[in-house]
Image 1 (cartoon, rainbow, N blue to C red):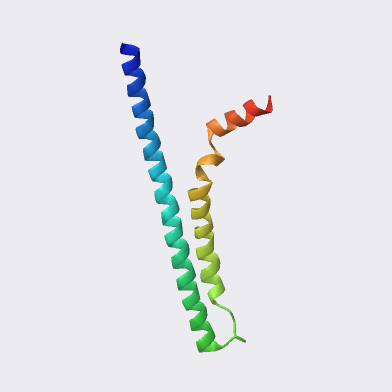
Image 2: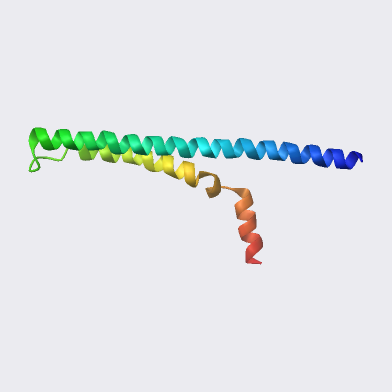
Length: 100
């Protein structure tokens, strides 16, 4: 009877930990989507300013904002969608186990 209670308690703790992990992933992914939307809107405005003030034949200066911010967006995407798996011991263990 006591083992059943301990098992039930452990599964509840595991479930709570899993929920915290899922919330963390959900927050990162939602944050990335907000950042990506903002990136598109702001850079569209910069391109419009460039186009209407200097014309299409002039130096395309918005590229610097797009590249700099794009590196940050790419890093945020990687962290939100692939960050937990890259250095995961569990994934590495499963990979090695499947090779045998």
